[in-house]
Amino acid sequence: MESYNDDIELVYRVLHNADAKAFGTLMERYLLKVYMSVGRMIENKEECKDVVQQAFIQAYKKIDTWHGECFGGWITSIARNIALHHLRDKERACEVSFKENIDVLDDVYDDEHEQYLQQLEDAIKLLSTNDQQIIIWHYYEKYSLKEIAQKIGESENNVKVRIHRIRKSLKQKINYE
Image 1 (cartoon, rainbow, N blue to C red):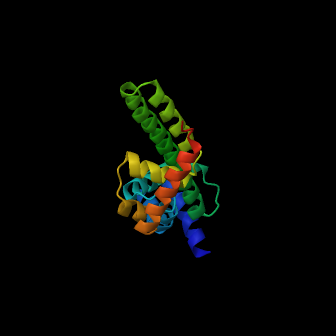
Image 2: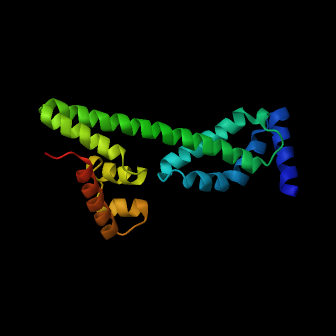
């Protein structure tokens, strides 16, 4: 309860005295909690740090919207929202990049191959999000099996088997003639 009362006092000092040290104290108090929460959503450490920094900046700018609830919960919810927005933007960029790669290939290959690429793109969209990510890492971003294994917390052999199964699934989904 003392921490909660301290938070109220610190927020009051920020609001009424523009006390940067008081906000710094709040940051120190909740930085690890916010970082851990965002880190569960965003694996890349630099992106995670950026999101956490954005969250504290947003909290400082919007501190007058805090209604006395748990400050840690409030700042964490801000951080989660920013992280979700970041992930959505990143997913859109990935879709655009994927489409650009397909567009480049379209210029090189004939109509028959273009039809095959469309079938492949459609088949990839039917995969689970995790399988799509593995395909993108392996074939488009050229990650090694070891790098993918580290990212998803599985052995290299498991990744190899998953890629084999994904490819087999894609072949079944594509209309071969």
